[in-house]
Amino acid sequence: MRRKIDWLFLIKVNSMVELEFFMTQYPKTSSSYSNSNNCQICDKSDHKMSVLYPSCKCTDTCLTRYLFWKCKSTEQIVVKGINLHKSTTQNKEVRTLNIQGITAKFKKLIEELIFVKNISKPYKIYQKLLLDNNRDPQMPKLTQIQSFLKYRRSKNGDVNSIVGLEEFVAPKILKNNEQFLNDEPFYFGVDINDGSEDKHFHLCITSKTLLNNILYACTFHFDCTYKIVKYGFPLIVFGFTSIQRKLYPIVYFITSHEQEIDFDYFWRSLIQTCHKLNKDLINYVNYICIDADRACANSIKTNLENSKIIMCSFHLTPILSNSLQAS
Image (cartoon, rainbow, N blue to C red):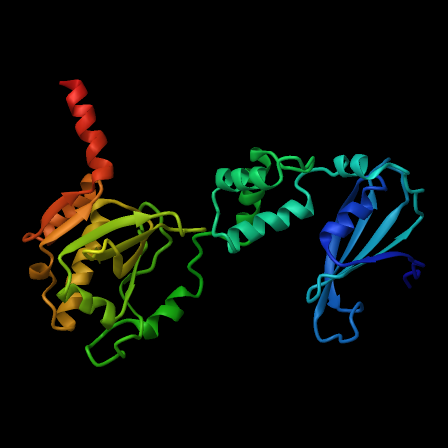
């Protein structure tokens, strides 16, 4: 029969930030294992709490142990211990500097930048944190942020995971003209694979209303964006611009690769879908603006033979400049 441990209550805090600062008065700890139980912190026990058992790392023979209860609903944390050390009398600044790695405060700030500000690149996150917290001694280094994001993605699962995607997409694939309402999104060009070099991933999404924009557009655009992509594959947008210089998306295309075969797959799928909806895409697209990507240009020449390709000035200017300098 296991002996009951007489844990000594230490403190109840409201966040990991408070817990981290409280523990700086003791030597560093490591958590050997954890589990999940019904919450014993809140009045209601209809949710779970995480239970961790950190141990002191001051010496190999130290008997100090801690017990953390962390509510998964409110994030409140109860701290208990046994065979405790005496707390140090260090001031706040010294205790802050003793925190190893990225602190809970900055982890929370990074999460907010990712989900609220839509900033996911390590260097962009580092710049933003530096501007807002340049005098904070806890400010993480760029390499620490890079490692944190890499570990975070690994912990949250494979960023290119397709588990359950086929089942989700299957009932929303366009089969005929009467299947969906005008503003109801549907999928086409579905080729769900793991995104490896041998098995490319393709998935297109649009609606009847968005496709109707083909009838009224003059200059179309086809380009890839990484600015709104946090994980996984890049997003390609096919749309058109108005005389007021506003962009109106028509189709969103997710692909694991940006090769000519991937662009060919997109155009063939879109042409077939337009035929199902009684639209002749080939004769509607007169001008299409793209970047300097040769694979993209070749695919347009192959599938949209009536279209004239326009290169955007952002890419055209340096190409002309380099050509003039070379001559």
